Structures are given as C-alpha cells and as structure tokens.
Length: 60
Image 1: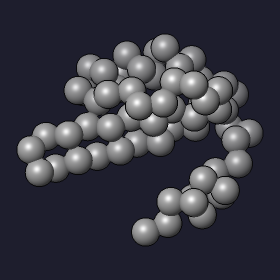
Image 2: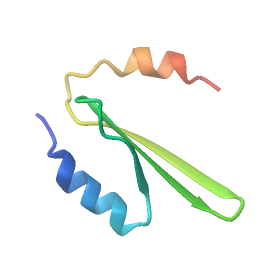
Image 3: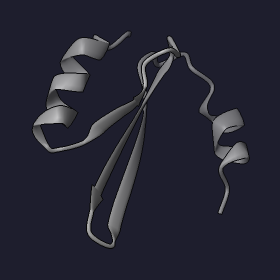
Image 4: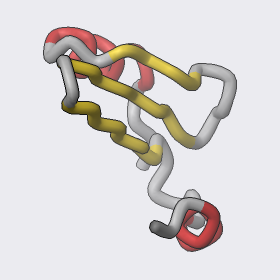
C-alpha cells in the first residue's frame, strides 16, 4: 500500500508541522517546534520501505 503524500502533508500541516523532506519518494519527514519543545516524525509512504536501515542511522 502506498500513501498519498499530499494528503499526509495536509494532516501534518493542520497540526503545525513543517514538511522537511519532499524529495524522497518513500518517506516524509515532518518537524514541529514550540518554544523549547521539538518533535520530528518520519513517515514511510510505502509499506515495502525497509525502515531498519533508517532506524540504524538515527539511533539515540
């Protein structure tokens, strides 16, 4: 299943997120900053996207 990135963008923009990555076909990255609080969401647009490589690269 593939998600429509424009519809996902609308949802996140409604909650004051900023779209940080539109150039990748398989994921979208959204960020939100309010004062000292920040949030980031990485949304796979395709269920066949291998998230394990991404998880390894951003381990905290």
